[in-house]
Length: 204
Image (cartoon, rainbow, N blue to C red; front, side, top):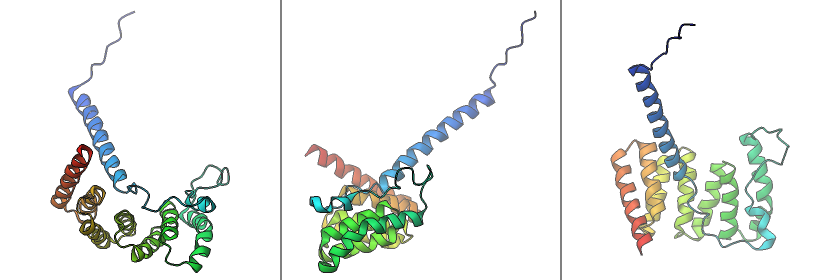
């Protein structure tokens, strides 16, 4: 039998494959950076709740098998968050300025992507403890996701007035300037300062 012709890859096909690979790598890098932006830094600085309140810190999730493998809707997530936050609400009726309860409630709603409600709780907590930079960073991320870019930037700047070396605030400020304001220069400056502060923190 005659040998079948062997198709050699053309320069164009190699270029297209390389281009696709490069774009995939860039997309992955951008995705990681954006994911880092609102990872919530760390849980806002509330002491670990007592055992009686342990159920309030559980992240909202759909009951096993209840959604038939489907992701819950935002309305369903809100209902779950409302249910989880209900015991905290009862306690807040008697102690409305308990910053730890307010932060726990904010965490529940933020995890359920109910950013308006989460922002409200974080804001009330900051009225009690205005120097809590971690909570202010959480509030900023909720405001950003809720479409209030200027409010988010304002909160981060207030946090930096309290703690000028807070790397998380600087990093988030850079990302919000980039994504929300198309301010590439401001983003690069904030991220450079953030990187330097993180490096200095590791070396100290």
